[in-house]
Image 1: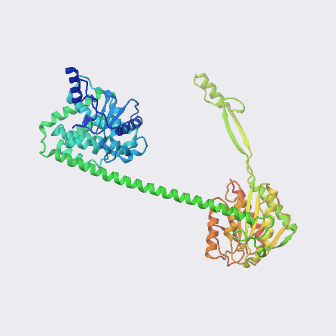
Image 2: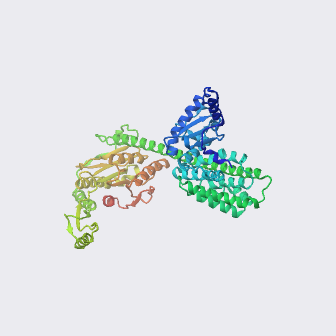
Length: 599
């Protein structure tokens, strides 16, 4: 096999020797050096810039030109620190279409880039040199083993280059199979080293190389193939600079072939058989690579679709927040005017009938709820214990004795005998309660108890924590703020009536959510919806969307119903109250539970 021609001992050619001889002979000036076109010179320079990352070396020069001095598609000259590159590897691309300095451009010419990666592997790892008196046949065998060894070593440094190293099998190995320098058993052994050696180096898959493995086992015999496999596997573990060990493995290779070759019959069409087996390997590789590319493309498309969906979802959420802010601003207006969903004033639809002074029972209930909320919001002080080798802190005698024993033994003391306890007060979570009451004609029985409950909750929240907020909205098709988000408790109870038509719970929830920040964690959050839920399908869907968003954010949602014919809004905790007068107590208990569950 001629795979070893990728590492060249010298850069001189017969033409160069002739030029030097002509100079010595007749004194004529030497022939001008043959240079590549300027466009290919730029490509070579850019390949050299990228070669630093591939090989870890900064002293390498890349020359790219049509054809090479060595005859190989690419070759590395250790003595000159030069990599020679055939521009034909880039076909059908033209020089001005190739820009290796741009990361990612190499995906347009994977075969050419794979050849560069292969030579970079030689530049980084093929640094052993054979002695001057080494047997040429042994050196050739060592260079044959070096092919897969160098690529395997490169793969440990840059595993993402595996795709490009696979592409070199067709570019660099197939010419060696079609035009071998050796025949017979050595030809089959060389193919095994090039294909199966790359399999064991992790570059090719076992299933892809089955055709070559089966043919080599028939031609070489199972025992000889096992012996050769052990030799290249041992060579893979050889250090980059260890010429002695590498040549020893090469000698074992020559000895194994020298012993078996005379006794093994050679098929007349061996070259054709080996080429066909190698072609099967290439076809299997192409199929696997195409499947991998298709899977990667599908994954990329799925990721792009998810990104688009997430971007669209974020845009929708931002739009919803803007609309909710506009709704809250229009609903919680200073004059308490009833507004339509788009913010247009509707004073004729205002359900508010007036305001009255709270009764003694309502004031008592507010004080009782305030105490309950403070009890629910109370948090025990947290304790944090730390140890240290020095005061302050409580002395632990066992740790002190252990520290003395460590010091007496001459070891570094690690025991920490002092314990310090730090106690911290936990912040009291404030409360956020929003009440949305349905004022359609079927909810007239809820007007008085809900008006009383709204005042009681607002008064208790203000007495509990200055940062607590409550608000109440009456809704039919329009929206009316009965109480607004403020730290000040209302002085009077706002009374209202229920004689509206249709429903607009979705916009009511938006206004309460934005005004009280029901979607933001850190507070005890509760939304109370007083309704029989006798809605149309569209009204129900709009309400359920908002309720789901709040429950996902951790806000408790309670639905109070007064009649047996009431429907349940999915996502809410349904509480049926046969007696409307029990609504204040139910709302108070739900508010206490909400603040108690806050973390």
